[in-house]
Image 1 (spheres, helix red, strand yellow):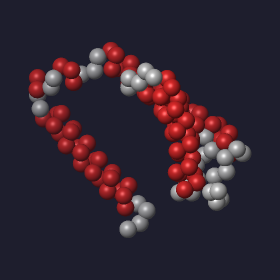
Image 2 (image 1 turned 60 degrees about the vertical axis):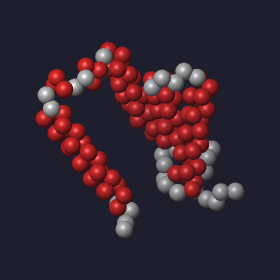
Image 3 (image 1 turned 30 degrees about the vertical axis):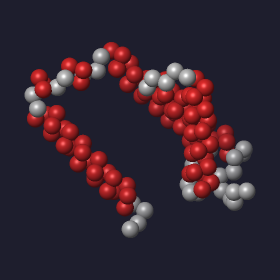
Image 4 (image 1 turned 90 degrees about the vertical axis):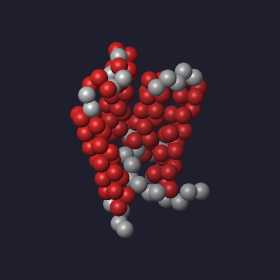
Length: 128
């Protein structure tokens, strides 16, 4: 097994699942779907807000770095999905930032775009 084993089979499984859902959606008549299946205006706004958060994170990834960008995605998507406790949102975003840095940057040694954190947080080397 090489490094592409899991991503390959994960993508095969996702492709099969997506094909099954597509066949089901095309084969079944429209009257079989619940009216709640179709998004309302609030659902459409949530989708747009999620897309805007992801686009913002992508634009800011180069200058700010991946850990901060993922913290931004977390902070933007949590309220969209219904989280209202701002302390929990802030804590989760901060834990996301340091979790991504520690797990991927330090523990696994994955070269992440660190942006402004490059001078502050060393990406390689021993953990003390």
